[in-house]
Image (cartoon, rainbow, N blue to C red; front, side, top):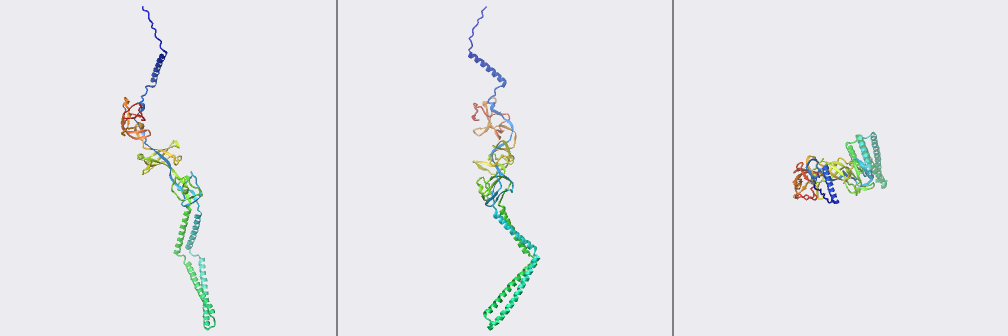
Length: 448
C-alpha cells in the first residue's frame, strides 16, 4: 500500500484573496440588481420618441400693450382761466358730468342783457296782439280835443293879430305910427301864424293816433313784433351757448387717467389726445374708457387670425392668472416696425378689465380651431438639411447606427409639439437627441 503523499500548497496572498472576494461580491450584486431592475436600458432608446396621435390647438404668440379703447383730452371751447376743477386722477365720471368751470362773468352779463331784451320784445308783441285798451282810446280822444282847442284858440289869436296889423299899416301910411311900432305887430302876426301851423300838425297826429287805436293793430305790426321776438331769442341763445361753453363736461363714461391743470390755470382749446405730461396749457384732464390690447402680428401669421378668435392674455403683473379676450379688429393695412412688416391687431378683454392697467406689457396666445387625432412629434426632433429640406431621423431599432433622414411635411405648431402632415406613420420611432458619440451621415450632433 502506497503511502499518501501530501503536497503542501503555497499560502494565498492577502491582496489576491481580497480581490477574489470583491469580484465575487460584485457579481452577486450585479445578478441581484438585474433581477430587481431588469436589463439596463439602451441609451439610444432614451433619445427617441414614437410618433403618436394627439389633439392640437394652433397657437400664435404675440406681444401687446394694454391701452384705453377711447381716450380724449378735455379742454374748454374757448381760451380762459379755470374757475373750478371738480375731478381728481382715478375718478370715475359719467357722460355729461361737470369736469370744470371756466370764468364766466362777462358771459353771464350778456345773458342777463339779452334776457331783458327778449322780455321787452315779448311784451310788445303781446300788446299788439291784444289791441288797444279803452283807457288808451279815451286818452287819445282827450289828446285830440286838446289839440283841437289849441288850434281854435290860436286861430282866434291870429285873426286878431292880422286885424291889428292891417290897422297899423294904414296908420303907418298916414304917418301916425312909427316903423318900429308897425314891426312889432308884424312879428306878432307871424309868430301866431306859425303857432297855428304847429297846433294844426299836432291835431292831425292826435287824430291819426286815435284812428289807429279805433282800427286796432295792423297785421304787419304783429309780424314785425314777432320778428323782433325771434331776433331777441336768437341773440339770447347765442350768448347762452357761449356761457354753456364755459362748462367742461365728460363726453362719455370713463375714468380720469390724468389731470393736467389746476384751478386758476389758463388753458386753450385742444381736443386731440396727448401723451405729453406738459399738455397743461391746452388740456384740463385726460378721460379714458374701457381697456383693449393692441398687438403687432407679423404678416406671416396674419392669415391665421380672424375677428372673434379667442386669445389667452398673460401679464408679468399677474403671473398665475390667464385672462381671456377675443380679436375685434385686424388692421387692413400693414406697417413697418423695426424693419419688420406687421399688422395691428386689437383684442377686446373679456376678463381682467378690473386688474389690468393701461400701458402694461402683455403676452398673447391666439387660439385656433382644434385639430383632432393629429400625427404629432416633438418640435426638437425636426431638423433642416443644408439644402433646406425639413425632416427627422428615423431610428433603426436593430441597427441604431443606420438611422436615416426622413423628409416630412409639417403643419401647425403648438408649444413644443408639431403636426406631421406627410412623411411619417403612427408608431414610427424618431431621434430627438442622438448620443454625442454616434455619427449620423450629414448631421452634426453638437447642439442637436
